[in-house]
Image (cartoon, rainbow, N blue to C red):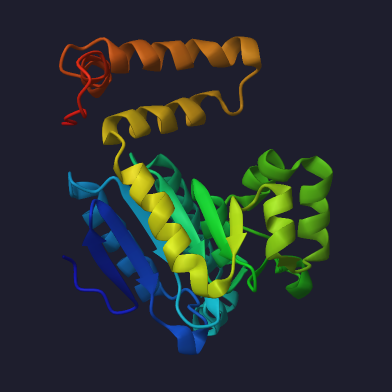
Length: 262
């Protein structure tokens, strides 16, 4: 396990859980948090037993974006801004490309960089008392973590522009209605809801879920007639090897037994 200062990493029952542990700063993102998050993701991906990654916060916030100290440094040096923006964008892309589902457990406020992190997760469960926002416009700043590309694909062109341009806070129920979150639950039931969903996913084949994520990424921006091509290519590549999880899943079904995933 890596040594982490700003978050914890726990692995149990094939689920890795990263929890931000800076509630006094509302889990704002520092350079050390970037280091820790990269290290924690590396550890989860390298563990062959891990099939699901959960990311959550402590206290009142999931994460409210970049820490003020880091912002002071960035506004004083354009090179720092470029480095931070590239790092945040790389982290969101990394989450999307992980060979396992990533669940955001949104316990409280998620704003700016925190909002961008949850948009990069595959599934979002949110406490009904939580609120989320891009919030950059309120400060005369623009996003840099890929959210202007992601959010319109989730909520549509006009809704996304309204969310970005107004910077308003979105309550949990609306986040679900818009499709940003899968489900909202009472705050004291969030951990149980996340555990239930993660447990269901952890029973699936990691190779299968990784292949599905590659399909999603390959077809998302393509016209439908083109999108089916990489989907079929990925399906054939994943399914046809005799030792693949797809083959094992079918054999197990035919033999009326639980599958034995690699």
